Length: 315
Ligand SMILES: [Zn+2]
Ligand SMILES: [Zn+2]
Image (tube, rainbow, N blue to C red; front, top):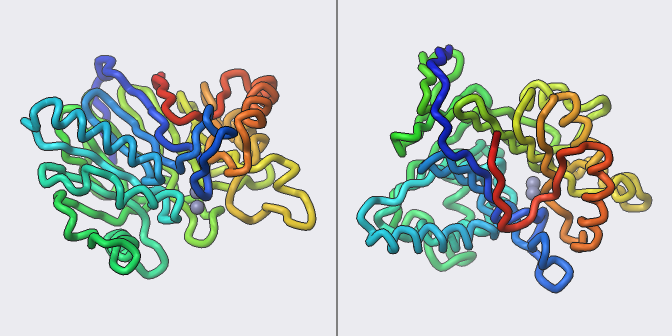
């Protein structure tokens, strides 16, 4: 049960894309414009920083965070909230190289879904263990607070308090005030095998929805349309072209990813202001992505393809 207080003074609300590639990272001259690192984005509201997913894009973000920390003389502890949509490699493979993980002055709050039989802490621990990696996850120096979350949770952050709180949105009384940052969660079941968490981050009447690794349904995914209603920015998977999605003998139907057409249908029906297409296929060259961006802008005016390093204001 939520109570909402008055509107916030406008603090800066930004999304920065550190990795926009799906499946696996790619290098080479054909991906220099849009970038080859796998999924990671940073949502900042004032001083508060929320990172979503830890694909290889998180490595550069970690280096920036460390430079900022030492630039300030290391006077303040470093805080970050890290949300996982799911635990596939392209959303976790940068974590072992995320520099703040090894900094004793870092406090990291990690949230994500339960995967098969494992709580988030167990899955993360198993992903970083000898012989696969020389450093054990728990022996990295940062303080880590790891929580499994699901659709009935609401994460509450605050521009004035670096510690996030997960509450049950049906039972825990929560007052949303003008410094609150609210993260809503939708469990989307279209991605094999356990589905993904879609996040909606709201502050001061502005909102961004991140729906990666989702596949469209006929007539549009009604739950996602409702969840993304009137968002300022919807960031949506569009890994495959319509041709790749359908082409025999190797169609991509059922792989848990969308086409631009599917993303546009959601954006239109939800009435979002801007649509960002992401999770680019490793085989999509800069030339192809530029061509598609022009093509699909004719179907949805405020549309763009995400690029590594790009930063946009929400609202
Ligand atoms: Zn993915
Ligand atoms: Zn995936």
